[in-house]
Image (cartoon, rainbow, N blue to C red; front, top):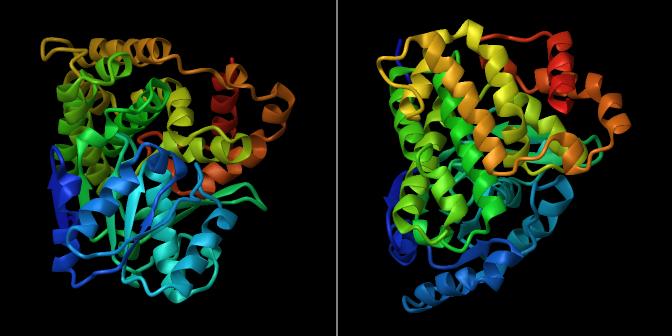
Length: 386
């Protein structure tokens, strides 16, 4: 059986990779991009730096900075309107997963119109919107190399999964220097998100030899460096390895899909406004423990790739060490429980059925080595609270 691999047409990785933006645009025959970002990227001066590099090549670029964390149907409408009213020939998506996901949605809606729900999975979007150059500023989501965007319908509190080659950026410029000023909390949440991508891609029922190679190397890069960048954000070597690990994890899960952690994470994020990486982090130890019996060898491989077990450890020992590491990582990186995050117990327990239903509807749990029932999901959500 063969595996279809979908990647950006151009991938530039390393220090100051973002400086290649004008050359990439020129190769696409584009000269008037819209930079889609958030206010933090403007405050840090990153958006202005991209503008300056473009101005040197006589490429004027406007900025749209009204994207929000965990983008919603409403939050992308202003950007869609801006694209439809402008004469932009391309989009530069600058920021973490939320600006890049927003840009993907705006690229399609800005060109073809309609509503985001029209593009929700199981529809597969093959239409090409405005070409996107993605410049990630977090080592986390891998959105720069995925054919997926997730937009929340605020009317139903549903995180809609939208996918297809139409959402894949044409180019990804992976510049680790843009992560050096990330605060510790975002570093932790996005880093565990990337680790989750790699682990879930490796244990997914849709895994292949190709995605395995990306996922294992991603774990080797991420696991030894996550604590380092959390405690010292200026550690360039650790930041560089985290950034490449995040991108490889994105390649892995884009081709093998995510599994149960992500399926359960999206409803928590939508209902209680928990950042995506943080809700993944809350879930990762619990879901891993639930899933190990159905993929003992695969999870043991994860432990070895992460460096928490050796080749001499048998699978059972490796998996014990894996669970201990995931719990220790959450403790050190100060990942809260739902209660510590501020979620009210009554509200959480009252939504268990809905969250389980939405998790199953996402399709991701079906990729898990151990496929849960709705009752299993409710038990896992309860376990997460305690």
